Length: 307
Image (cartoon, rainbow, N blue to C red; front, side, top):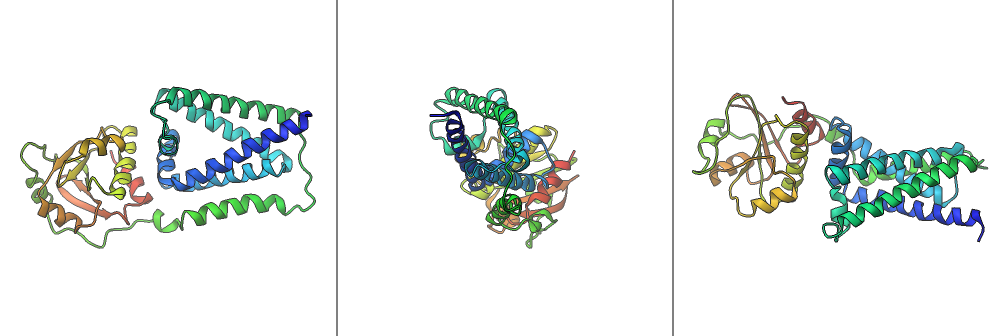
């Protein structure tokens, strides 16, 4: 078996891995977006755009490797960028926060996290070695049809944007159609005995969530990630029941967010029975209200700017 054939087999292996990675990240886009925010700390209005571009680049690079296309060594340098990102992500895995996308797609991650990290390190080294070898030995592919150079990246990006829906509406300022008639004092006054009331001073973000709601889970998860970047952010979960709150908070990694339990009528009075409901309160006055459809990337960017 000659060196060229071995190299091409490795190309196919890496290409298939990149395509799988791109598709899995698209299927778990909200989890991937949280990871990108953790790693890069971009404004939340940029996170969905960057996430879709990145998955598109992975798909393009994987296809280019399998089809042995390397226009002007574009594939080589994209692979170098992906290698750098994988190494950075691996460092976060080892020393900061594990990538929760792996927890979802790798059922034994909790049992074999160390083994998984070592395996990932081997993959990063393989990618780096391949890039170095490619820079030294390979040549740019002179394509017979020049338009193919643009077909793959444009096609991959179009696919990933279409797959993940149309973004502009999620990047604009939207308010919930339903606006509560309750005052902050009425809501705060309904906090049940034994639970802490909300401090009326300064900026407060109140998340009215149900512990069995997937939209509530992802909303809480994203806000908790923002709070880890900005510990001074005042945010609180408002619940009508705290049964099962420990597992909800643990899986959403929201241990940094306190919670209170309020009366059922007040909870309905804020959410109209549709969760999550989110209130932004400033100095005891309700300033903004969102629901699951309107608490979008613009709203997350707004929360990111508080304090």
